[in-house]
Length: 241
Image 1: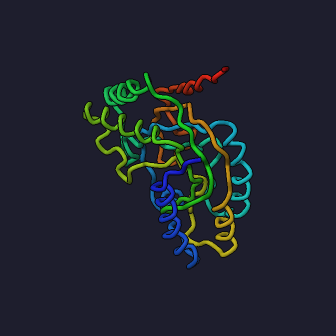
Image 2 (image 1 turned 30 degrees about the horizontal axis):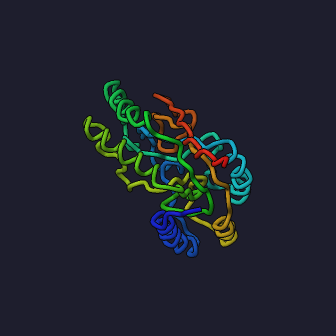
Image 3 (image 1 turned 60 degrees about the vertical axis):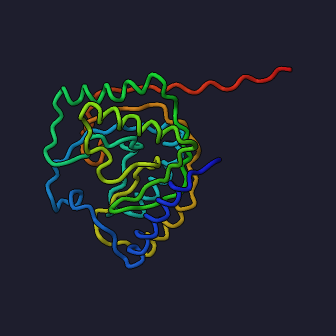
């Protein structure tokens, strides 16, 4: 299994920063989930749905997190996803006119003619900001090449000009825990540290969706604009001689 060192290093750096705060017994709480601020954010995301095998592998971890972090927000299984591109990042009072959506659909659709499925290895846990997530390692560069082509297609149509506004995506992680309260115990930190070495298997991402949603991709907020099923690459023919 070939792991992209840039992706691995990014996850490691994020964990180092977060772990330093966790060791002080604190974590950055999400003010919206905590109810401190009203939340009117929405955005347009191109995401990949997790296959059943990955959902099954992560299910026990969600249960452990729910038991260990009762005061925090554990992502429901229905909301788990890999962000391919945050095309219109979630922001206050965002509205998506039909012309904008159609241009984004076209920007993605043109790449689907030749795109193949993306293979990802899911292992370990990291954290950044108010979120802890399962790390996803693309096994080749096809996902990031696909991202770049869709970016350029969006720019050519003068849409998605804020794509990847927070940071440029290079991995394939998915959030499992969001911090609502600003404190974490040593026992809770131990749970996260144990998950740093957990393995959730290798999977093929084949279902892509363009959606409008809130910041957390809660199922009740998701509006599906378009879905695509990627095709698997043909296996090389065996030499029968």
